[in-house]
Image 1 (tube, one colour):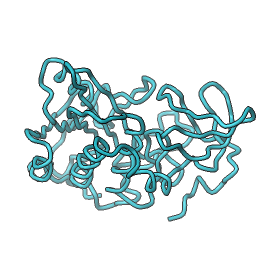
Image 2 (cartoon, one colour):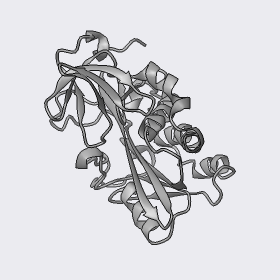
Image 3 (cartoon, rainbow, N blue to C red):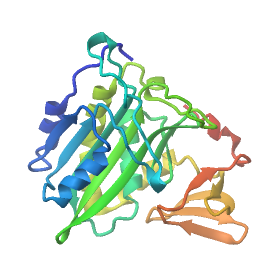
Image 4 (cartoon, rainbow, N blue to C red):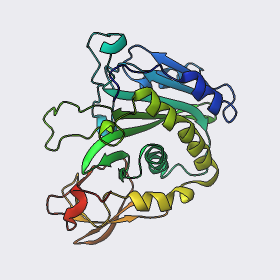
Amino acid sequence: MPDAPGPWPLDAIAAEVAPWLTGFRAELLPSIDSTNSELMRRARTGCDGPTLLVAEAQTAGRGRLGRTWVSQDAGAPSPTGAQAVRRALTFSLGLALAPRDWTGLSLAVGVSVARSLHPDLQIKWPNDLWFDGRKLAGILIETASIGARRYLVVGVGINMLAPAARGLSVPAAWLGEVLPQCDAPQALLRIVPGLASAILLFELQGLAPFLPDFQARDLLRGRGVVLSDGVTGTAQGIDSGGGLLVHTPAGMKTITSAEVSVRPADDAPNPAWRNPPS
């Protein structure tokens, strides 16, 4: 990655996205607790237009199941020029949406982000991007009821540089491994227009247009997995609605709840998962 980060391309992103999302605006925040939380707060006060929020530092970011996700820049001085290094990209995209069926949206978002970045990225059901057997990025989707409508917020956090281990048994991946010359602003420009387009396509057609690409990037398929309730089995892909199919000793089980955690088992039947083919 370049030592000196480039400027945030908010005008360029707005120029691409505004024709599809009337009233679209893009904002940069020096520091915020959570870009997702901020968009949800705004939506509940009536500010529910299509908005992209980008944070230089995020101090109370959230993942699934209440997990915290704090950007590496949080709490650190904010240098400028050649000394400034963005260790993570954190942003949220919010817009009113009315799909016929919400199931599988996180998978469609994962497919869109992976497509925008690199062909070797895989998707771990239901909302993580992995590279080389390690987590690279997380996605958090939230909605709020606004009158008769629902406001969608899609939050994305991507490691740009090698993160601290923070007690993880497997070190995390970072984008510099696969796109060494791509800084956070460039990654944002690669991702957001395609993400906005993908969300609108999902609103019209659901998960179906994204299924072939998900299946090609499915990290868990054919591997041993452990569910949060201790049940073990082998992942067998997903159904048409995005539910995870797990073959267990009691038979096939479909996992649909976002409150269920799934992790690869140490004795996965496909040992090549730690080094996906490039």
